[in-house]
Structures are given as C-alpha cells and as structure tokens.
Length: 111
Length: 114
Image 1 (spheres, rainbow over the protein chains, first blue to last red):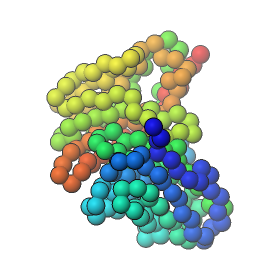
Image 2: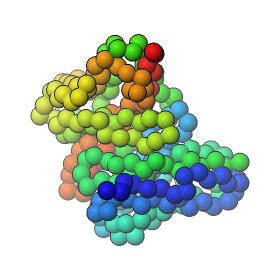
Image 3: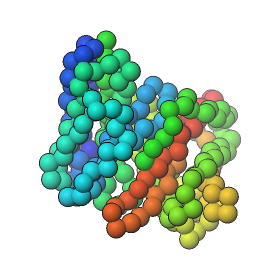
C-alpha cells in the first residue's frame, strides 16, 4: 500500500517568508510525528499528534512553528518568518503502534 | 522523540567484516526498542525490534542485543555490505494510556569500505 508522502520534496524560500509543509500519513494511522533533521545530524522531535488528544508540542523550537492535523489524516507544518537556521530536512512519520513509518522528507532551504 | 543536535559519530568497516553499532538509552521504563536505518536522501526505515523481556533477537544478517542492567542496546550486522552504508538510529519506546513516547538516539553513520 501507499506509504507516508510529503510535499513539496524541496522548498527554497527567502528569509522572512512563511512556508507550509504537508504530510499525508498512512491511512488508518492514529499517530503522526514531525521531526527536523539538520545536515549530518540526528532527528529533532518537533510535534506529535495522537488521535483526538491534544498534540505534544514540546519540541517546537519557537512560536514561529505550528502544526495542524485534520482528524487522522493530513498534517501541515507551518513555519512563519523563516530564518536561515530553519534550513533542514523536515520528516513526517505515522504509526499505529511503536514502529514509525517515515516519509521521504521536505528539504527546506532558506536563502 | 528527541535527539541532540550533534554531528553523528562514525563507524568505518571493511566490506565483509562484522559491524557493531552501540546505543545507550535513557529510560529504564522503556519497554520496546527499534533500530532504524536511514539511507541518504530518505527517511529512516525499520530494521529490527526487541521487547524489554528479551535480551537478543536475530534477523537476516542483523542481531540486536539488549542489556537492561546498563541500559545498552547494540546492533550487529554480519558480513557488512556496501548497501549497509547509512545512518543507524536506535529508538526507545514507552507505552502508556496517552499513546507512545519515542526517544531516538543520536545516530551512528556507518561507512563500508569496498
């Protein structure tokens, strides 16, 4: 079946602009995660959605970052007033249990 | 899950040798562990898992060892191949009524020399 998809695959934006990154999880998965991965580094947790529970936003680095999820489907990560330090690959994962299924990521470059 | 923003430690091995990648986990209540492999330009993918009531589990060319006493996890890859070159992450998981909490390790980059 279809895996996790993310769009766009690449995004180049100017400093100060807002960006929206989209994640389509595997159908039926109740949990959805967003991570940031800087070049050559590990996974930095951003936010976690589980069913209808309040999301765990403890990893969001600043109030410029926000995320929404519609029910148990699509999620959007929004970064406002982008900074060069936001340049990274943003990974989305979904799961129904412990194992997380990752999308290919969106590479964000802020110029 | 959280992971520190440090550059990844690197392990370099000769093709055909065995590789051992180590991971220290943080929470003694973690009850399920997963190793993920991340190839260049892709998201991490599941390799092998182990429950906390086990100390060893084997897959195809991979073995995971769990030492709960010292909170240590290792991934052994037999007869390492160039296709094994990737970044490897361990993940500890804690289940609960509020869902699952996952903490990823910092990752290790494996280079396989031909």
